[in-house]
Length: 214
Image (tube, rainbow, N blue to C red; front, side, top):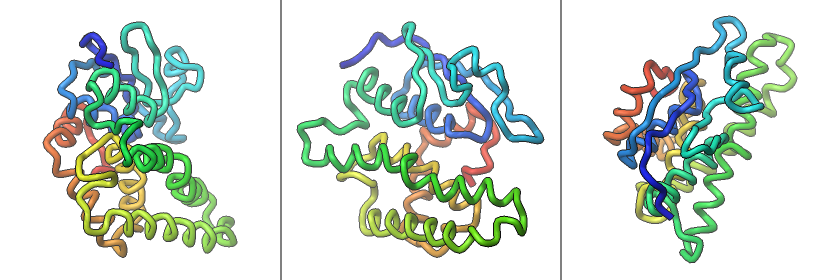
């Protein structure tokens, strides 16, 4: 279903998952307004003002036609289906739909967990040493799975770029920021291909500095 094209408001937190939303909006050539928020310099947490938009106080959040929508995967799929007429999504009657569904949920449901554990335990210093072998093994497990899944193919699902590619970019960007991606050549090259897309570059220009995009 294609919605009425109106300016979409994006509540955008610096250095966060919301960069994916700007990228998707650029892919779809949709008009949008950015409301910017900055992380706390010490805690790196989102500011309390975001709770006025959504009870979780997290980003990304969009406002569109009276709707407030949170969660990266939900926002990406909503934009692709509601405003994109199904472009950048996969139809439920397609053989690729189960795979599309998998990657849309896998990115945050599984891939990000060990990376977030790495992020949080880094702050513990030596106290986290007993956890590190398990965390590193899980990161390698997931990166190996992604690496094998994109080997010999341009995109994560089928033969065309979809919202699943946008969704999968973030765990790979975090892995690269942690220096974990260098040993996974196919996943590394896949991320480079995503970053080479003109719409990705335009999203970065609109969203501001994004260290994880490097």
